[in-house]
Image 1 (cartoon, rainbow, N blue to C red):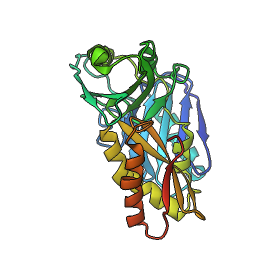
Image 2: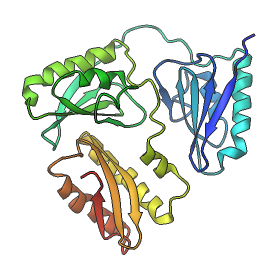
Image 3: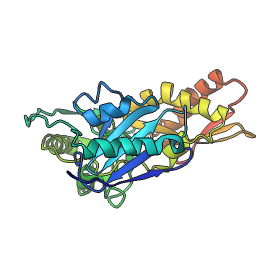
Length: 295
């Protein structure tokens, strides 16, 4: 009988708790489950979803990360979850079922964005569960695909989200000269089963800020509007927007632009005529202006 040792990590106010195991229990690439139906091939994860406070679960080689609903704090239940995981593993329970090793054909198509320096490459399968942005190769140490892309001399920045990769190029090259090469490279990388991320992007400061229970009621409303109405629109253009802060006195909303939105010539127009207008309409009297901190 194997002995599994688990250590727990959680921060007060953060929705995520992490259970690190001293042995390999899952795949090298992170797998994210949003509900029990998505976990049908992962009995351990299904067990966790029977707990009423579990919102989503991520599984990697030696770690199980669990996101909770706001109905309680982790300090109330973290020991219970740790004990359940330890018991399940000790009794030899299946973590994730072995799938057939049939290679599924991967397709990738290129899509232009409002930012002429950015091209969006869309795959026919999910790539990551959380958006990640890399400004240089050093930041991409836990992202093999991004690291490989940075070896291409014209690649300036890489943004990965859901099922697509947005690449910002330097001005020395035109997209029509290299788009086919990049598309085929990404397609082959994915089809060969290579890992996109070796670690979950859990420690993204801005995401932690958004998940914090310290947000005011106004800030929570802003984040909710951005998530529901704004993010899907900017994602379709290969970008992302994240809440940074809110100045209650000046009534200013500060946001961070990523991917195709960062440095886009039309981003100022989008901020003022799209995002700012919507927030003003949905939160009358509370919003004066929206500012991109990296715009």
